[in-house]
Each structure stands twice: as structure tokens, then as C-alpha cells.
Length: 223
Image: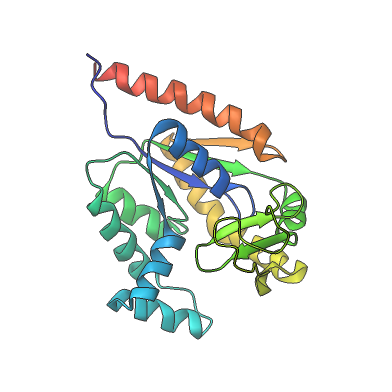
């Protein structure tokens, strides 16, 4: 009998790189739990938890949520699924956060989606969102069944103010500045795997093949 080892993975990539789509496919194909920092953030703000109120105050003032607050929040949720394999999305975003994660868990692999910024700009300015759930649509390649409305609820979709071309350019520059050191951090540890391309459907088969081999190798080691 092959023993199943707990697998801990991180997915990285700039906003609009297809992380949500790829994460969904990884979860469906390999059974990992999807831990999204955005979902956790929204849930805590909506529930008005102590950390949620602190983060809302930062966001309302246009400030970044402090590293130690984000780390406490995410690690708290990870402890709740301690005996499960998971895929972490949206965290870590800084070296401090990466080190905090490393102090608590050993990360097996980091999947980095490398998509040209020009392609991302085109994607994001075509993006519409169902705010209550966070579901994302794109009028070019993932349109809603009914234009302007969420597939599941029928509620109206909105375009975020930060999806304008000027704001997208700033966000991408900020991501590059903030995250390049994190990618290098994981590269130096030998756990970073980068997948480059312009279309999620063409990147996905390579991610799937890599993870199939990775998980098979991991499980054989503990068989």
C-alpha cells in the first residue's frame, strides 16, 4: 500500500496571470485544499474579527496590511487544516511572510505563473467580478453566460476601479518589486518551478504533468 504524504504547495503569479483558474484545476485534479488569502481576508472582514477589523482599517486608509498581521491570519487558517495537503494562493508576498511560513511549515513546491505583463494588462481591463463571492469573469476568454451577470446567482457584475489601465500598470510594477525577492528566495531553496506562457489553457497541461510527477515521486518515497 502506498502511503499518502501531506503535500504543501504555493502558487504565485501577478494579478491576472490565471492563478485562480489554475488553482481550481489543481484542487479538482489532485485533491489539495485551496487556501486563498483573499478569501480569508474577506471572511475575516465580513465576520468583523479582531484581525479583520485591523485589516479593514489599513485598507480603508489605503495602507498595506502589515506583514505580521497577514502572517498571523494565514497561519491561523493553515493550522485548521494541519493534516491536509494544501495549495496556498496569495501568500506569501514578501520575504517576511515567506520566512514566517517556513518557520511553521515545510513547503514542497512553489508554482510560479510567468505571463507577459502586456497580456495581463489586456486581461485585467476585460475583467468583471461578482463582488460577494469573488468569482471572476473575462469578456475575452471566460465570459458569463449572460453578459453582465453572475452565472450562479444572476447578480450584477462590476469592474473594479483598480482594473483601469493606469492602475493595472502600477499594480504590476508593485508586484514585480515586492515579489521578485520572494521568487528568488524559493529559487535558492530549490522548490520553485516556473511555467511561462500567454494562455492558461496552454500553461495548465505543463503544470498538471509536473504535479503528477511530483506527487508520484513524493508518494513513492514514503511507500
